[in-house]
Length: 514
Image: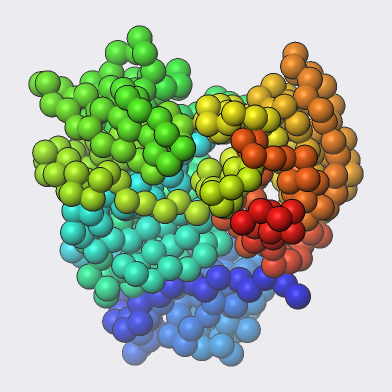
């Protein structure tokens, strides 16, 4: 059995747009007659094709999308948009063809035009960075809801349209899907949207055609060096979010040195924030209380303004994410006092973040947390937060993605070893890599730590979490990092249904804990 691919959310009542009007708007070349042709959607995939769609054929990793033009026609596509190579491949497909130099680069603006997403848009917030994008986006949406707005969310974990929730495919969907999502949100009277923006989204034009009201930078640390040559190239991939053609204002965290560089190179007005003592920022975050159920903090701002609230998560980094979300709202025009009043009424920020240091254990027995963290920096912060509320042993269970950035594996394992008393190395998404080889690399990395925990190699992860629980008792904590909210495992291209949260709860029950 394979996991069901989540649906693409589209407007339920799309308005038709003239293909001739689109061609005239963008000054494009065409082949075939445009007379009477009306477009109601845009897609890159025949699997997501709806009758009335403009099918976009672009060069992929293995084949050209124009190879599927006849299949798209048979599925109801009314026109093909492609490049000169695609024109040759499509041949006499019997559809009007619109020509562009780069379909990917044109996709965002064309999708925005077809779906009319630039007409009366909601407030749009975008967050980028290595870690904290998802948490900041969820917390931002939660505060907006507490302020009384109908909200939307696009994150690694989920898409939200008001009360509707679906699991995400990509951190940031393709431009055609993003604009369809925004159009669906407009139908649902969504007034504000929080969007997680990955470096890959910027590199691959997935947020083209969107003008953000406020964008934010969380941090930068070792990750995604399978997609980028080095940290400098990875950093440069994120900078375009701070261009005036993409955003009006920005908020930049100075908790990593990269933040200062964002400020220096930003081409839009930005304000700064930090939770690090000794750093000079316009907004400062002061942690005043930490409990297993929440972290309380004061946000100090310019002109003596301040706000005291709490976030229902452990760790200074989660308070920093919440404070960043608040400052984004202030930059969008919300009054700090109004935000504080709305939060006070409900005892702080009311939010559920799936798979973000999510406690899945009961009141008795070991504390068990499932977390999506999959970088050295994420491990460092989350382990530190867990240890703070652990009177006994800290046990960590983790694996590493196959066919992804292998350069971070040694450092992930070293950090995991340094921060734990017991380390259980297992599997995650091996994809097309050999799982045993990935585990061997992680074991090498763990040996680089100065502090050497008791280390075990246990496969598969179902057995690994049960082994970890067997070693734990009252007062101990288990952190299972990697799977987080995900509901599948990717093994040789097959997405097998799988829930770390369900497996963790089952392991606790089998061991006699609630």
